[in-house]
Length: 297
Image (tube, rainbow, N blue to C red; front, side, top):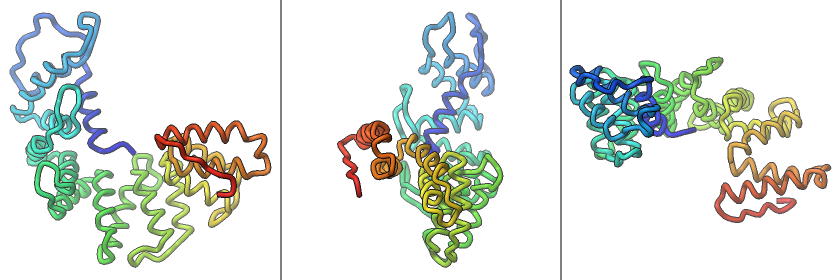
């Protein structure tokens, strides 16, 4: 999964890309909304402008944020949090702008305030403050906040059942807007029977299946193993190998290594030699170093 900050920073830049034309003699923006719109204009290259004017866009985004526009404050904070496009990372400024946006009711800003405070970036580490921000966003239905809140609460036995409740809300069974990582986390919890949650391999498989269908590579690998072994789901080697290849295709090194072993050890090892060698090269590229997988490992 991409980091939340990366996604928001990308969205912040993308949000500045909406106008198709620029007026050569456009009037000076007066309102915060007009300033934000000017930033949108400057970010988009067209036939008159060979390249986007990120510096100019940032100036107008700053002015819109100073004027109190919540979206501009959130976008500016995200750019300081992530950096790039001429903006240096500055966690302190990111925290300041997210705080201003949160004070105006931005639940999205609360998610990122929680991240900064939980990690101690730009401010002193404060887990309780981070959890409070995530609760605010989680209560508003933001899946990322529900997931983060659930993962922290799951670290202690006394809050494990509340954690499961939040993770289920984040995973949103049957809803494509759910957070796949939350479903994977639930799969892990029920597979192990952690902190007072009873072990339930059938529930575990159901959560892994949901996360795998949503494209989560770790869940795809685990569910592939379930299909290949027939535990606790009906054995289906064809689906299992397909699922394992999906995980490997997302550069999951554990999935690639397992796939190589299966291809080398299987009854069609000679036939699959070329594919095994290709995956071996892929694994070395992913790992950044030579990683030999021997037959029988």
